Length: 282
Ligand code: PAF
Image 1 (cartoon, rainbow, N blue to C red):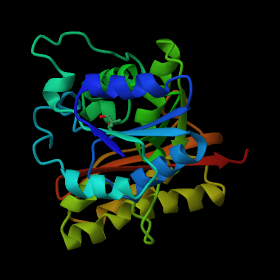
Image 2: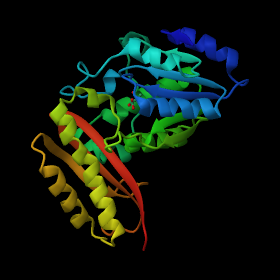
Image 3: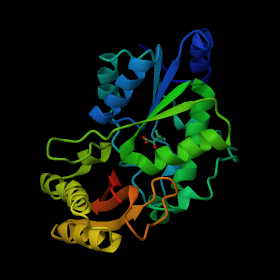
Image 4: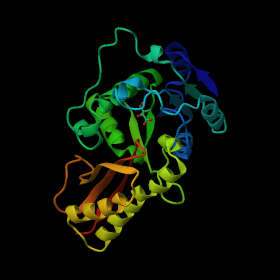
């Protein structure tokens, strides 16, 4: 496993394999967990060369967000990746990716204003910009993103289409603890009681799924039931609970066909998101 810290060294490695091997790419911000490992294994399964990047991207954090306290565990991350069949790990410094006079970014003007974008203005433009830069450096054929960050994967897919990147994106199912909590690097910031309270996130999604399974078609009623579940936990503040179209992220009036149930909350001030995609019978 090669570890590269510079754009030029990654370019050198990629030049030797581009066109000869299928390059799979898993961009991450590190503090890796089994959700990331699932993405890596998917890449290793379908590609002959796998690249992982580890970079906590400053441009996707707002001024009051947790950039400085975001978990950083490079040693553990590299040790985890060395047990997988990863060919190259790119670990750039912020200076490698953003020069002092950096002034051009990628902006989405539709999907980014929905769901997480409402409370995190500029977040997805920061994500798109760094992902576009990484794509231009790594030149992947296939890229892998987790369903937990559904909105992110959708917007990156849109960027791939709109900006003609010759890349195919695979979304991989969310990995959960046995008790249902979606794995997230930010879970490490929770206290024991916060971790217990956070179970209400998946419980609320399960309540929604079962109400819809029983025939409820009114999103307002489903969301009210989810809210009641989450409100029992004092450490949780709700950012949003929404039932939307998985394609446009627009709120829906009647539950019918494929829908996305999306949750964002703060547990002890730690922002956690989760979602379920459900196909509701007519
Ligand atoms: O999902 C993440 O970890 C980040 O948003 C990403 C895609 C690596 C961009 O910084």
